[in-house]
Length: 109
Image 1: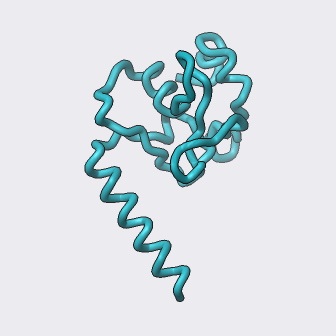
Image 2: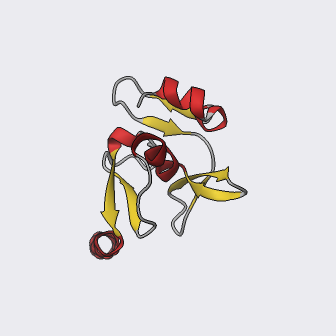
């Protein structure tokens, strides 16, 4: 899927995305939400939803609600499905705990 397909299928979402030709990231310029305010969100079906998940579903079809779409490039604002991966809830929870422990260790150093 490319950004032109998003523009055609979801123009309101596409208006909030700028493509970085150098990195390939699709930088989200809309609202950010989630517990750490680092999740690109948009009003989809009458409530704020993950833009990454929405674009993944456009590209690949339905996935279990227990699965999470995570960013793989390290850019919190990137919503490019090619820079995303599907993870199970347990793996995602473990990674978040691992990251928090890492962050706490570096803050105290």
